[in-house]
Image 1 (tube, one colour):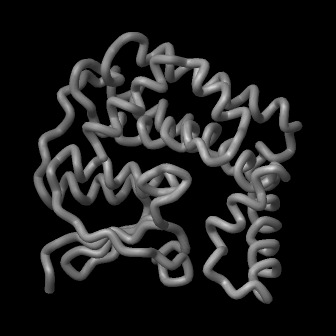
Image 2: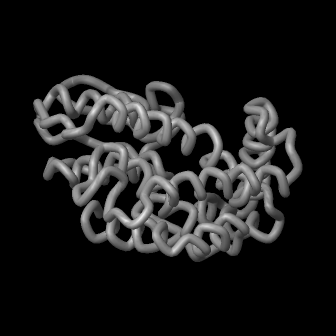
Length: 232
């Protein structure tokens, strides 16, 4: 049994190390702590929770990016971030804000905006025979539309959704201010998440309001450039 963790992810694309911020978050965390791993293409049909990423290590399968980070911290006895309780509370709250607001607006921008749909369709489903590509991609898009509605954010107008995203980006920019990372000169676990989400907003292969508004925060653009060098 190999001791090297296997990370099942999506794939590099859209100018990003992975098309999803969640595998990127795990990749960044492993780089931060100098952990070796093997990156493999994941299949949601085989994933423990039907979601990617997931980790295989020492006979275990660990699903969910946050639980993967918890597992790695415990399994490798990694040093905890030297933060106050208040900073941990802020970091935790920020990450949940990114999960529950920003992520879904990015999903809407990529999958539901008609001008972006052909780009994401060909990027994700390009290897599927053309006779099936339209059917399968259409089913996935329809399913995501339903998920957005069930989540609640999809019940709002596009203008309102993009306003939600702007508020999140403003809060992140304000917290970062002129610091290199969220809580000082060195990145923490929370930066692994935040940098990955900012990267997803700044992907350049699809035009979007999320891209435009993120570029309007120079400190977030610099944050990704800094994080890309350090964490990827």
